[in-house]
Image (tube, rainbow, N blue to C red; front, side, top):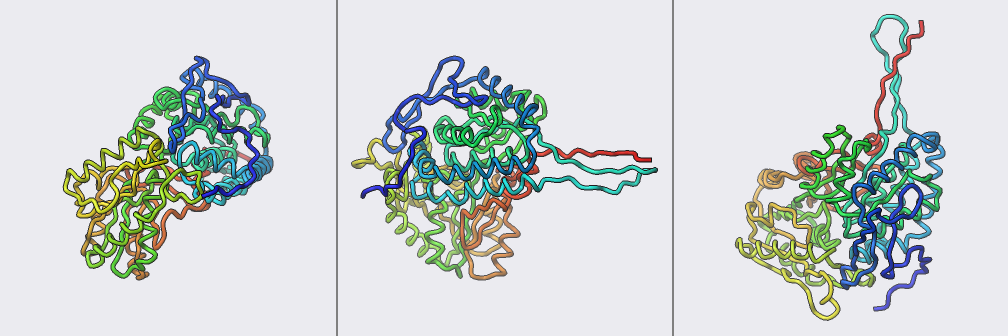
Length: 497
């Protein structure tokens, strides 16, 4: 199939060349001179090298961010920050096709999905622009003797260290950078070593928009070297992280040095509950793509599928048929519905869970294999997989796989479904399918998760807060709560008599 030809003005062509990182308004290499490769997960080809930064590079980036925060950036008025964010949004709109292709080539998400993220990402930028002029404290009546006026001020927390994963580079970058710019903070962003190219393209766009030097810095490197140094740095006032629970725990420990603020959006093992009265024509494809989208590399993947027993067998059969019909291939082809896993390492991880599911007695209904035929041979492709006869104690039902694997589990009563759905250390998201409004309200109230979707999934809006319960993290992204994560509240008392 021919690829739809949308004119692309390539700012940073993906052609195997070396890319520098962005610090203090300049393109620079790591002080050590070390580099690392990034590969196209669909073909295995090296598409670029980038600097492999370490502690000394993080030191320079944090110093640049601090200088900008204390300097010219601190004098930007809310209106000026708003105008800047709107200009960035306009440039994102102008270059969206290149941004989409960058994400697809670097981490594998099908181009139809990266293109479809346009409204969400640009909507976030424009939402943050609107919020930039809406930040305010409040006047508070106190009970002190005499005439004393008391009020609060909302002030930017300072230098923000942002660490993002590979599975959605564009959206994750803007979810961190957008609120920082709106509130007057500065940022040092460390993208995943698996997908660093789009964040570097974003730095290019920020630079064109006129973001002052040091306000946004993009530093490439590994988590163990650059990420850990950023989390520990005494000059960082806040860390915002999206990734695994284990890494989140290490970041919390690292933050103790200066008790920096921390926001964490971590792993999940999200339940999807399908009631017998559900509209199966709607529920089957949505439940399938709650996991199979982005090859299961989604923190909110609805990988534990609880289906009421009376419809369980029919639902699993239809789910497997849907999985078998999905087109798998290089994400740059607009016909592709399922792309590759991001790396050979992630492929091996997912393969270990496929082996565990069979070994523990689950029934493999469809999938369960690496795909190596023809053009897929050089990539990291796994067939969309459905397991049945899964029990709650199996490894595939307990642990986050981050691959295209669904575990189907029957249930008999709603109370049972809720109890089992909540029986996990995670609490990021959940889905419910029912035609009964009372059931929808009951389950959305009882499920312990930060987001609950009824008769839909993956619905995320800039104005609605998103985040986790329990070991899925704390803090919120989206909504007014998101901006509060980047602000300090100062109490002020002025005696006027």
